Every structure is written in C-alpha cells, then in structure tokens.
Length: 473
Image (tube, rainbow, N blue to C red; front, side, top):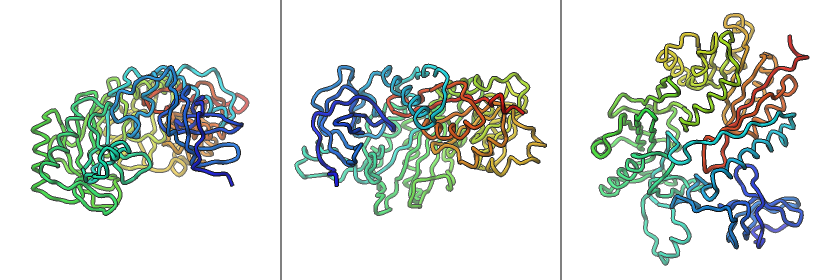
C-alpha cells in the first residue's frame, strides 16, 4: 500500500491540469498540486492521495518562485477560495485557459477540431462581477499564522465573508474584496460593524442557530444596486433598525430586501424575499436590451464579458432573419432575446417555471414579439405536435449548467437533427463529453473560449456544430 501524507521535496511545477490544479511529473508519476503555486515554482508537496501513476497533494513550502510570478493584489489571497491565480500575469492565465479547453476537447472528446480562435480576455480583470454572496458566521476562520500569533488565546470573533474551501463551517472575514466595485465593500462592512456594535447574533451553521445568515449584493452596469439580507427568523425591531442604518449609510442602494430562512440549507429559491425599500428588482443591460433581475433570478455574473459571450453565440448562429432558433436552458431568456432581432422566431425552453416567467416579462419589456418561452423538459416538450405548431429549429442554442447536458437530451438533439447547434458551456470537460456523443451527426466548425472570470481557472467556451453533409435530410 502506497503511503499518503508523505512529503515529496523540491518538486518542479510544470503546468496546470483540470480544476486549476498545478501539475508536476516526478519519477514517472503525475502529481496534482493545490496551494497557490504556478509553473516554474519549486515546492515541497504533502500527498493526500498516492497511487501508482499519480498523486494529489498540497504545496507546504515554496523553495523558489517562478520568474513570472507577480505579487497578489488582495490581502486574502491564499486563504479565500476565489481569485486563486492572482500570482500570475493575466496574459499567462489566458494561455493556460486556452490550453485547458484544447486539452478537454481533444482528450475527453477525441474530436477532430478546427483551429481554435484565441481566447477573448476580459477588459476588466478586477471589479468585474455583478453579484456576490457573503456568509455570516459566529466564529471567524483564522489562518495558522494568526492562531500562532495569538499563543492559544483564540477570541470568538464573528465574520462576514466567504466560506473557506472545503470547510463548510469556516468563514473568512473579508475586509476588501476586489471582485465588485464600490459601494459593495462599504455595504458589507457597514452591516458587520452595526451587527457587532448592537450584539446581533451571527449564524452558527453547526448548531443551526443565530440570526444573521447571508448577504447577497448585485451591482448592475446601470448603476442599480440590489441588496438582500437573509435572516434566520423575524425580529422586526432589530431588522428595521439594521436596514434603516444601511440605507442611511449607503443611499446608493436602489432595492433593499430581506428573506427569512429557517431551513438548514442556504438556498432561497423556495423562499419569498420581501421588499423593504425600492421596486424589488434591478435592471441590467446587454447592448440596448434591458433585463429585469429579481433576487432569485439567474443572470451572467460578469455583464461585460456576458455581452461578449452572447455576441460570439449570435455570430456562430449565423442568423439571416429567416431562422427558427430554439434556446435550451434559456433561463430568464437573455440569449434568446439577444439574438431575437436576427431570427424569424425564438423558442425558449427551461425547467424552472419562475425563470420562464422572467423570460416572458423580459421579452415584453424589450418589445420582442417573435419569442415564446416554455417551462418543462426539452425531452418531454419537443414532440411532433410541438414541432408542428412552432416549427423545426434551424439553429439550436444550448447553455447547460456545469454538469452538461443529460444523455437523454443529447439523444433528443440527434433525433431533432437541426442544421446547426451552438453549444455554450461553463465546463469544457462536460462539453467535450457531450460533443463526443453528438459527433455521430455533427462536426465541430468553430471553437471560441471566452474568459468570464479573471484570476480563476474557470472558463466559458462556445462551439459551433454543423450537421454532416452526408446526413442532410
């Protein structure tokens, strides 16, 4: 049995693998490394898994740094779960993301690929997100260095920030986050300071008790700011006092809501946010399209790059005004509405009924009269009667979640056999798996990676599929 929890010394990091793990090769074994290291670093690695041909571990000491390493800009780097690639120049991040897409499509999909277009980087590498969710905890997470500095006298300090990776009950208290523009830091810090000063209880996720649970902030390019404070139970006097204080301190807030969540999990999709101030939603723009975003709505979290992503999708669809476009996993209708002016008709399908309600309202707001939206499973909805009424699709756009498309849907797409499919993915690995199944009928014509999340390993990828000529009906 191969030992784990052993330390391998002076390992040269050579590249990156899936999920942003650094990569090294030593004595014929591949080692996947976590811990804020990058190619060119020489590190000691403590193994957590140790197999014959591969191992996993965490870097515990860096002997020498890559000459390409830069100084991270955030004080929380290395502890917070986000922005793990701050130590890399952005141009190098883009290189590794481009390579990640190519590796997945070739290794998993085993596809014949055209030349891949260069990745489209983000013009904004800081302050690019439009939504963040923070968590309250009655016990702030302390780093090993902080614990040692306290000499065992560890205070019981509350926190409002982000979960520490892989530790469900540990929350890192965040002072300044660079993912969103101000006044987001002011909002979060104002609420924390008021809550501490007035001895309001922060939630204890293990004991399932406490009052303050989550804080969700959305900041739109339109300037609108929507804040949703999630509390465990009603406490009208303290709730009103806190919310009034926030509005007085941050008058730029356009919508302020609160949600009561007595459940054991943090999901609010089965709960009803209550409007305390404002209209109860925010408005965001993509080109000149305006979208209503409620507290439970899904919307691309990087508006700037979301517009870039949708332009690529529209370009790949190659619409001339005569096509029927089916938009699968349409959510609140943003992609379908975005391409609607170039299509004869758009048919959007989404499992979540509330999202379809938003899609219909967004279409009406933008005077899009050639789009219809339906709640349900594509596999169930798209039968002969549906096609007879709405028409066979000339182009299918599919934008599934990270898990990719269900195999039943892939088979349904092969049955529908539309001339073109534009596959938008936030996970090139599951996209490659699905493309391999679609390869029976389609060829990959174009591949365009788009970076939506600078300083992370996450990457969006758009693929254009065309039906093989020998399969044309």
